Image (cartoon, rainbow, N blue to C red):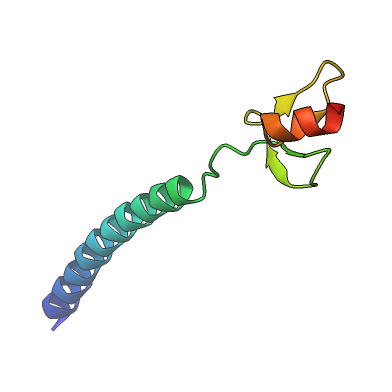
Length: 81
């Protein structure tokens, strides 16, 4: 009787240890996946065109000598006229 109880406890303990190892591995994997998914793409400042008011990325804007942003060369010329 006591041998069966000890055997049951041993089997339960081994099963519990194996379960915890798998759970830990799955948690670590899901955390790394979440970390990769939550990375934000590169965000860039938006500037407003002085002529039409359209917002464009700062790297795509056309600037005049006063560093006034425009969405296109045509709007830059139109604003200078």
